Image (cartoon, rainbow, N blue to C red; front, side, top):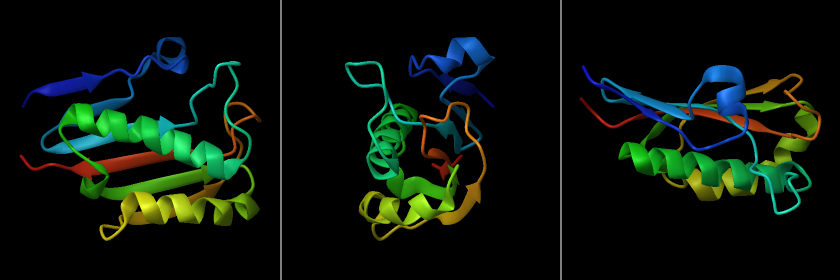
Length: 127
């Protein structure tokens, strides 16, 4: 079984020693993903905007793996404040549409308080 590692160039990848996604045995495992940085080096304000940004990064990794958001079968949403999750629902409904994955929302601290949501997905593209 060949393993493909996908790097997105995120700042934490070389610091921590991981890659954005790994494709193995028909599965695509996308690492926990926070919002990208804007031109000022900071993520967008608020959980909803950060959710959209993280989904764009995830979608790009899935595309490189030969998958799409429609192939996602499992997702973990990690937020430091569960009360901010509802603001993300419209973006999540738009992203997953008629192919909603099994999902879990976890409330806990993230690597930096400026991040309001982290999203981790697993997709299946077949063997």
